[in-house]
Amino acid sequence: MADAISELNSFHLDVLREIGNIGAGNAATALAKLLDKRIVMKVPQIRIMKFSEVSEVLGGAETPVVGILLRIHGDIGGSMMFILDNPSSRLLVNILMGKPLETDLSFDEMTCSVLTEIGNILAGSYLSALSDMTGLKIVPDVPALAMDMAGAILSVPAIEFGKNSDTVLYIENVFMDGKDSVIGDLFLIPDDLSYGKLLKTLGVV
Amino acid sequence: MAAEIIKVGMAELKVARHPAILTTLGLGSCIGIALYDRKTKNIGLVHIMLPSSAIATAHANRAKFADTGIHDLVEEMKGIGSDVKNIVAKIAGGAQMFSFASQNDSMKIGQRNIEATKAVLAELNIPIIAEDTGGNYGRTIELSSEDGVLKVKTLGFGIKYL
Image (cartoon, rainbow over all chains, first blue to last red; front, side, top):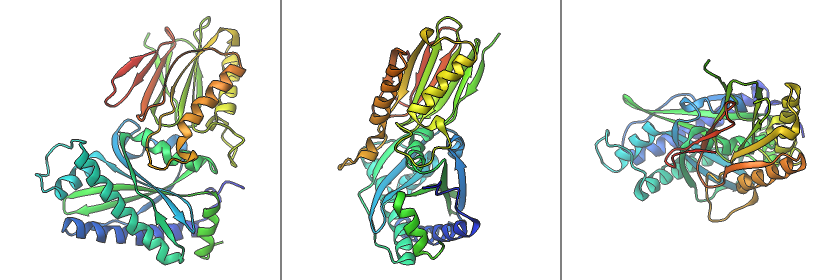
């Protein structure tokens, strides 16, 4: 198989951006309900990057971040990853737990389970948009959470992409709540066979 | 004279003559293989992502794999005047960043990277004199040509010198 990602043309990218848009719209609605706040979303950025550039997103390879990883199965297989920088995680956790917004983030069990649940809801709403658009059945597994250097967290999706490609497809979502914004990075990583299936269902190949 | 610090990105390899420092940031399941020539003080570093070029379908970037990446790194060391018999290795990385209740093979990539790295170095007769591998946390490494010391930095697990 040739390099799946570098063969994507601008039409494919438009389709993927549209999925990102609808998915992120769903996720923003879910987030707004969860936080009981008005959430505005910016148009997602879709980028194709070399591995050497991956760790430069999110403020550098050593920046502490939270990563939430889910395996997906059903008609397509693969994984999905959400990454939040620490200020975004702190904001979300403090809003949800009713704490003052400037409270420091402590990674106790409660915080982890709140963040995992946010990941679950956002990923779930994203995947249901994808499922509605394609008619494919997509089931997420229970997510796993890790907090570490951005480079180390990002190596997980990068390695998955690396099996079939020399580049990474990356979607950045910015959710805004007034002056405070939440920046979330999303990687959808269909496995080898699912890539073609996904694009085919969308009528682009 | 202060040594120049050279960054090695994911799926990249670099070599340098003394004095120099090679660094790679935020190793997760990937492995940093640091080579040191005890005679010339030449250093080399490769940041590999996957165990073998045989398992993947896109082969454009050889530094991505343990097998081709380490071979190419050794060739580049030879290119700047190193003899394989003077080269020693230190390795770091190979963590499992996420743990799932049901483990499948693709999630154990860190462990497979460690095994492949050791096998390739053994095949090339390059001894591994120190390692900091496994676990569930990220690492930043820095290799100094001065003494071949490998500095390993983590978030929350301190700093080690190998």
